[in-house]
Length: 141
Image (cartoon, rainbow, N blue to C red):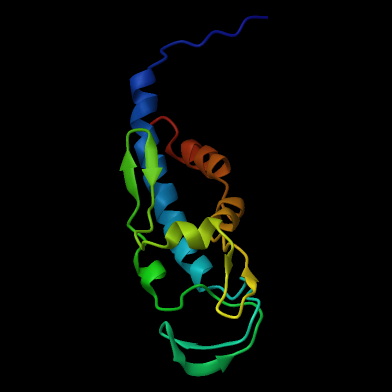
């Protein structure tokens, strides 16, 4: 048995990649915003917080969102697509720390990192999305 691929055009294939990346960015961008707003991130202590100050209502320890002042949420950039990449950034200066580092709260307890990206990528796996979009665009470049 022989399998032969004929009329292979790598340029046409490569022209499709940015379209699929753009579609993925449009899909996950609002999901990432929603993940920041979700009350799923453990917080070890009660606080009185509102808009980043200790003057608001009492909030007990437990699951919270990571909106706080809204700066992290508002710092998410629109998806940027190049011929071979998709980038979404958070420009708040502390975004990496929220995502990756545990830290000590004002009450001396440890707050775990709050990863809002991985759950979105698990809910909408890039490879699965890419394959489905690739099938949709079929033979058209």
